Image (tube, rainbow, N blue to C red; front, side, top):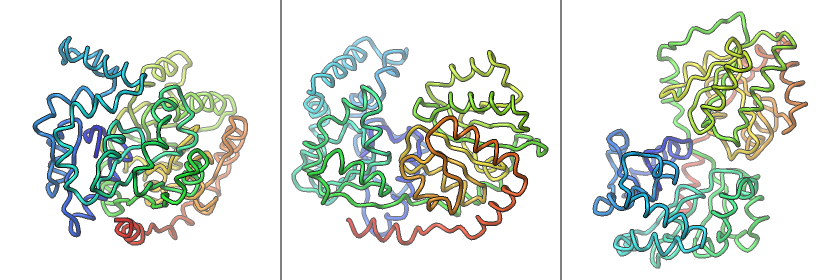
Amino acid sequence: MFDNINYISGAQKVTEYQIKLLSDSYDISVFSLIRPNNDVKERLPMVNFIGDAIWNKTEILGLSFYEVIHSNKYSIKQKLLRIQYALLMRLNNKHDYMDKYIGELKEEFNTYDIVCVVSEASKLRALVGSLSYPKKIQWIHTDYARWSEFSEWTRKVTENDEEIYKNYDTIVTLSETSRKGFIHKIPSLENKTVIISNLIQIDLIKKKSHEPLEINLNHKLTNIVTVGRLDKEKSYDRIFDLCKYMKNEHVQFHWYIVGDGPMRKHLQQRLENEGLRKEISLLGFMDNPYPLIKEADLFALLSEYEGTPVTIVEALILGTPVIATDVGGIAEQLEYGKWGILLNNNDKEISTKICRVLFSKAWKTDEKENLKNYSYNNANILKKTKDIF
């Protein structure tokens, strides 16, 4: 169950790969509030997509309020319906509204043995919880405890989670940190939680990393790359402040930021206003960032909170040294410093430690040599996934 299977994210990528690996053993269908585009259908030819009869009605529910209201694509009636849904969400009646639109498919959903919800913020969670026959499984891709308190929106989204999830059989978290945070918030569901890491497309990542890189890196500098959606929680303002500090400290570097999102305009303005064009490149969305990650000297992720970001593992697979804030499951991904440098989530320590690393000529060589021993165990993760099914 997806709200929008066309929305490109780490969770979407790993779920698609999970579907591919499970398709030999299971008959898999996908429901999305948004009609799957041709790219998705080509990537998942083994899947039965359901929802054709209601996609014209549900599209406005799968998109964000901002996307619907500010788009010329939707009629006044559709926009009023989306406003109505937003108001009902605040009044906690959104489940009834979703039932009204998707209720005709509930009988079909009840014929499945297992129903999985991909996102902890999905609008479909309560509806799935009301199903009587299937085993119900929720995947949580973020650091639940911090995310659920991050904003007014996340607090609203999660306020009824105990009531919703009591009807689920299994809650999957990606790390021990996320599991502990979830249990701290909802202790009554401890016995329903399990830890299963993401399945990663190792061979495809390596193959795509050998495609031509259209950016000419200056190897006289330390080239740093960050990949992620341009959202507030990813702390891109922190990166910009850090770049100003490193520039003043005469560090020779260039920072490449890959991704798009709501902060793009703000960051572009900072780039222009603060004279950082020589130090930072905002590259926008890249269909294949792997050649850049592979060629970079350092992969950095300085988020305020995370789940277990796929990009960390991708960098390690490609042999690129990682430096990241100790949030979410990142410490577990890096095995508490074995595969990279962990930073306290503190601006002063981040700036001091990164400068120290970049001034050390031996660090990059040592880290790259160390990463030759890195491996990722997809087989064990797949077994754990089948076990919960």
